[in-house]
Amino acid sequence: MNGLLHILIGVIALQLLLTGGESTDADQSGALQSLASTPFGGILLWIVTIGLAMLGLWLIVDGILQGPARDSKKKLVVGIVKGLVYLALASTALSFALGGSSDSSGDTQSMTAQLMAAPAGIILVFLVGLVVLAVGGYFIHKGVTQGFRDDLSIPAGTAGTVITGLGVAGYVAKGVALLAVGGLFIAAAVTSDASGSTGLDGALRSLLALPFGVWILGLVGGGLIAYGVYCFARARYANLG
Image (cartoon, rainbow, N blue to C red):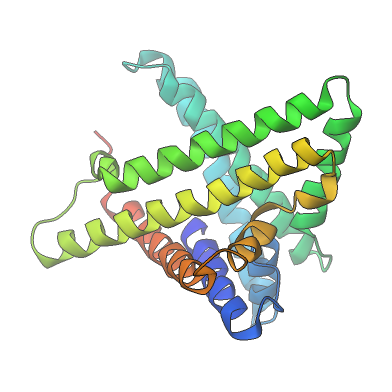
């Protein structure tokens, strides 16, 4: 399910190139909206909702049961955080499955505004931006160093080469996208303007404004599609040892 969402987001990001930024939201909401518009979209949304919810719960339970026994409790925290993220995605998918809608950009702006209204809120938003930047850097590092290979039992031959290539491209692209998201949070904190924090959709659109932005967004969009395909390979060849 995670792979399907990344593929859809990557496709939407590439559509931004053809429309000059006028397209469906290039984030999970846009991806779910596109899925809903397909034949049997309602059924697919329920499948995605249930799949994301089950994955989220499994990650949390697995983290709690196995985390303390592992070499590092870092995996415990990572497992729980990932589980909560998937449950949040399941909640968004559920709203579409029930015939409603959701705007991730608007939700991000609202969350940022609420944080800014709290004591030391601007500092909190700035710290959120730094954390997202750190996560983006982690993804890029994991892609460049091929650290993701430790998560898989990669087969030999052409299949292994393709999976490795998808992982490198996917992790780097997702890292770049997260760097852009983190940059928007920091910009919102510096300018005290929550409207600038628009999540993944705004981050991908902001890439178009950069020098060679069309090429950068094209590579990121293609990389997100690669990451989506890699997610399917990861599910098939996950290292459970």
